[in-house]
Length: 340
Ligand SMILES: C=C1C[C@]23C[C@@]1(O)CC[C@H]2[C@@]12CC[C@H](O)[C@@](C)(C(=O)O1)[C@H]2[C@@H]3C(=O)O
Ligand SMILES: O=C(O)CCC(=O)C(=O)O
Ligand SMILES: [Fe+2]
Image: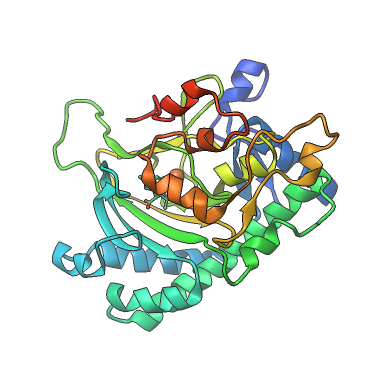
C-alpha cells in the first residue's frame, strides 16, 4: 500500500498527498504489492521500502567501513583517488566542472573490481572488500525483487526481464558512498549548502540509505523540493532514466539533490542498478502496444547513454537527446534549468 511516511501529514487531498513520501511494505500480499509499486513509480518515481529483510548487521558493517575511511587524513584518502570515475573523490563531481560540499567513494559493483579497488582504500582490504560485496549482494536482491514487482504490475510477459540485467555478471551497476561533513563556518540561523546538486540518476533503479541525518530532497511534480526524512534502517528507491525509457515514459526518473547539514555529518550509501554496457535500451514491447502507442525514445545502448551522460553536466537533461522526435528547442535546452 502507498502510505504516507510517519513524519508526513495524513493523505487527504491531492495537494497534501503530493507532500507525503510513499512507503512500500515488502511483506504485503504480492498482487497488491506489484500494483502499489507501479503506482508509486508512476506518481512519484520515488518511494521508501520497509520490511526488506536486509540484515541490519550488513548495513552496520558497511557504515562502519565508510566511517573509518572518511575519518582518515586527506593524504591517505587521496591515495584511493582521483575518482575517474571510480575511487575517492572530493568536491568535484564528474568530469565537467560540477562541484559539491562532499567527499565520496565510487565503486563498480562487480566483485572483481571491488576486490581490486579495495587495495587502494583500506589497510585491511580483504575485510573492506568482503563487507562491500556482502552489501552489494543484499541490496541487489532488493533491487531485483522490486524490478520483478514492476514487471508483474505492468503485465510484462518476461517475468524476470529486468532483474536478469542486474543479476548479469556484466551488469554495470555501481556503489557510491557519499560523506557530507558538517559546515565548518557556523552561520546565524540554518544555512545549508548544496552537497550534491539537482539531477536524475541515469541508471535503471537507485537504492539508497543514509545515516540518521537529513539532507536528501526530491523535486515533486508540483515543482517543490520535498525534504526526505532520514530513515537509517530502510531504503529509498528512485526511478532512473533507463526505467523511464523502458516504460516509454509511464514512469519518470525523479530529480533529487542533497543539502549538507550545518552541524552533523551525513553519510549515504547508494546502489545504482544498471544493465551491461552493450545492452540495447528501448521501451518494453508491452509499453508500446497497441501500436498507436509509439515509442517516445530511440533505441540506444547503455554505453551510448553513459557516454552522453558523462559528456554533460550533472543537472542536464540527457534523455532529451534520445527522444524519437527531437524538438530543436529541446536540444539547446538540454542544458537544464535545475543547476544548483
Ligand atoms: C557530473 C556527472 C557525475 C555523474 C556523471 C555526470 O557527468 C552526470 C551524472 C552523474 C551521476 C549521477 C548519479 C550517480 O551518482 C553517478 C555515479 C552516475 O552514474 O551519474 C554520477 C556520475 C559520477 O559522479 O561519476
Ligand atoms: O547522497 C545523497 O543523498 C544523494 C546523492 C545522489 O543523488 C547521487 O550520488 O547520485
Ligand atoms: Fe542521485
